[in-house]
Each structure stands twice: as structure tokens, then as C-alpha cells.
Image (cartoon, rainbow, N blue to C red; front, top):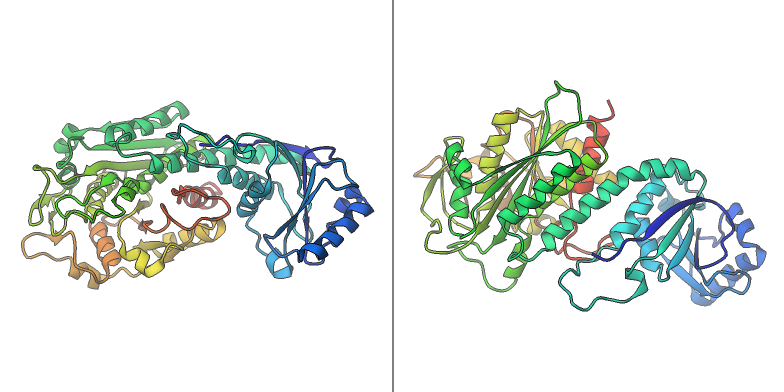
Length: 497
């Protein structure tokens, strides 16, 4: 990962060096306080430069003025915030990413006094979070590093009205930032480096933050009867693992909430092998598990006042002589049996055992699983939304609200008895694949059979977690999708009591 900015929060003051960043609306005018700080010559210079550059002050647009004669700074950067409609719902995290993308020096000062936009301490902390997320890159295995100043350190001063209030809030944002980066790193790691055991060790490292971590190996899983998960793992020379992470920050008698992640560290498809083109991307088939580890880090870092269980099923799906076959029947931990139709429909087998284990052992208030589960969800939602399936309307609504607040959006998809009927098997209790039609809903229907009456939601993140469209806070392949969404869910609805 590239070096982060060193971010300082300082009270508004005259800027003498480096880059100076200010904001204007469509009228090309900064606020009165900023105009006073710049002086009339600089304000006039902005208007003249805008006319020459055809800069209209639209939202997310920017204009650079090098060595402005009326100021002692190296560069004046003007960012547009648009008109009234743009100012009603500003995504401050994305704004932070935009700022980071425009800075190219060792020192920059951002005057966070925006025209007709209230910039609260929370908003400033979000801007700082966006700055740091934008600067992420995965270059661990490059022997020649990028020497560009914009990606190697630097100091960013955020000029604000109340630095002390911002610093207090930003501590929690740093935990989220680290959690997202942990998730991105895990997904980006090559599969020869990150097998199930190595992934479990990364989860074990959370114990340094006070998270209780328990690792189940093949022997423990056999004893529990997790034969669906083990069936996926049996084609690999690397054994499977389940990592159970517990953060106990709530009241002693409160039931926990639970997050479950699919962790297929590499998915060849097994005997139902995938086409060779693009198979290298299947190192990211553990993005759900990566999100859960990142989330647990974020919650523990800010000492969340909630009892949370994170559980991830870690396997490698390979096609050797011991691999399971289409036509095999496996018995899950619940005792239900599954006929294997397609060995590339393996994620639901992993989740079936882990979901059952979590609901049976921890009796959670609710469970949410995340999985890069189906290509069908991309056909339905492209890479703009994660598919949301749930047996509980209130939980679905809370996830939708958290998605709107963070920009990690979800879209509720159908889940009903018709899809459950489609996975009936002639030879077992169910089959793991039901054909092309409704593929995401039939996969969710299988998972629902392993949650009992626990309120539950399934997030199909195949389109959002890896290779998703780049934006102001993510210029890489892995997005770390879900960490901010679920942290917001916990913060808004289970700590604000």
C-alpha cells in the first residue's frame, strides 16, 4: 500500500506555502471568510482564470492556478461544489477522495469552508477518511515503486473551525479506514500467498485489539459435521478453516449480532472447472470473508458498544483426484443433505455450515452473510448495487438506509417459496444449483434453509467487491466493499440506544 497522508486538523489561518485548496459554487465565489483570507486580487484571479479555462464551478470539477502572484503558495486549487441541488446531499467521503486526487505536492492545506454547505466535525472526519482511502494502492509485490510524490507520503492540513472536535471523531474513522484497507489487502493478495491457514492467521491477529479468535481446523469441523464445507475443501492440498471472531463491547446479557463471510481463497470451479480466461480473478472469491475481518477490526478499533460475532469459512476449491463430483451428496452440520449438481456452486455449501453453526451456538439477534456468490447478480444489478435477500423487512430496511448513507448501496431482490421449490432434489433434501434462471434467488433460498427463524440477510457482492467501477475513493481492483456499510449499520441502530 502507498503511504498515507499525514493529516493535521488546524484552525483557519493564513496559508504561506504548498498547495492551497478552496471551494466555490456555480457563481465562482468562495465564502466571505475565505475571500477575506485570499484577498481581493486572488478572488479576482479565480474569476479571470475560470473564464479562460471554461470552469463553471460544477460539482466535482476543479481548476488549478500555478504560483498565483497575489499569494505566497505554490498553487491555488479551486474545487466546485455546484448549485443548490448538488449541495443538498454531499458525499463527504467521496469529496475527500476528490481532494486527494488533485493534490500533487508534499504539503497542501484545504480550507473547509464551503459555500452554503455546513461542514460539521463528522463531515470533516469523513473527508479525511476519503482522502486516505483514495491513496491506497497494492504494490507489495512490485520491485520498482512509483516515485510520484502524490503516492508517497506528504502532509495534508484540513483547516477547520473546531480541530479538537474533529480529532475526537476521526479516531473512529481511522479504524474504519484500516478495516477497509485490511479487506482490500486480503482480496488483492495472490492465492499462493493467502491460503485458508494464512487467512485464518490474519484473522487471529485481531486478538491484539481485544477480539476473541477461535480457529476450527479440519478435525474440529469433521467432529461438528461440517461436511458441506469440507466437501469443497477436499480437492485442495490445503485444508479448510473456520475463524470465529468475537467482540464483546456491549452489555453482558445482550445477544450478539453476527456477520458471516464466504472465504473461498481461490475458486477454480472444482471438477466443474471454470474457463481459463479471467480465472486469476478468482483469488477474490473470499471478499465476503475479507469484509468481515475488516469490519471486526473497525469495530474493535473504536471499541464499539455492541456484542458482535464474525465467522468466516475458508477453503480452496480445486479439481484434484480427491475433489467432490457432480452427483455427490453431502450431509451438512444441520443434518440436511445436499446433492452436488455443480461443484462451482461451492460458496453456498461453505456458508450453509457456517450459518448453521453461528445460529446454533450464538443465538444472534440477527445474521448477515456476505458472499461473491453468483454471476447472476451482475446480470441483474451490474456493479452498482449488491443484491440483498432477507427474511426480515426491518433488517432489510436498515441495510438499505446504511447503504444510502455510505454509498455502498444494496437492492432488495425476491426470495420466496417459488425459488425454494426450484432447489428440490430427487435424491437429497436439496440441490446446490437450479439452472440459469433466478440463479441469485435460488442460491439465497438454499442459504435460508440454514438460518432457522433468526432474522437474516444475505448480500451477494459479486459485482461490488472486486473489479468494480472505480470512483473517487477507490482506484484499485479490490474495493473493501461492505466494511463501511456494516459499520454504519452497527453504529446507527445498535449503539444509538
